[in-house]
Image 1 (spheres, rainbow, N blue to C red):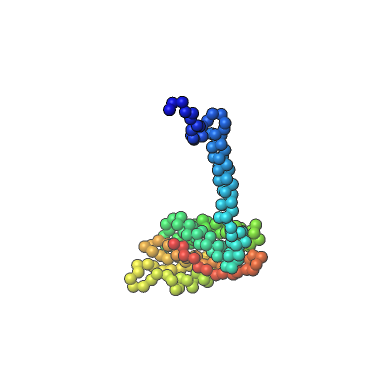
Image 2 (image 1 turned 90 degrees about the horizontal axis):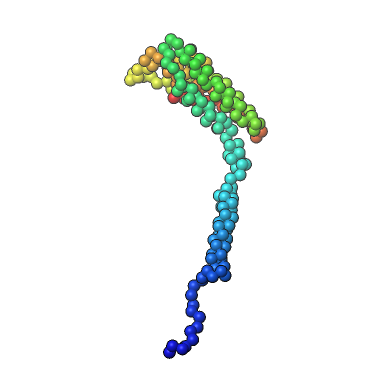
Length: 189
């Protein structure tokens, strides 16, 4: 049985110069191109609904809300950097507070001018005085002294030193869709 002729054997692809390994590289390249084409499609899918008018519409419903948040941060930052002043020098404490707060208030007023939004921020001593009458910590179990207002800033004597409690503001926000006038007292702590 040795003289029988054998037929061709079935074997896997072999690299005998006919391009078998080239075909594998071409398949990998096609897969990489397809994956790269999916990236922009995935980004487009993720950003569906993120239209600039969506954010503008939400803010237009509550004019001045962003302004009040920025003003609140500015008051907290300015009061945190205040030095120690004796109660007798409370006007000087408020003057230092003003010096730190004023640039931030100017920044809040001019932040949205390019969007034709005008913001005006003024101190309101009447609102600050009313807040002090109803909110200053006092009573038999408190060791705090008198409260007072200086230029719309509520201050209190604590252990002989001036402590800032709050600031009263009138805020006007005018934008193409309307305007809002707000009177707020923001805590300084």
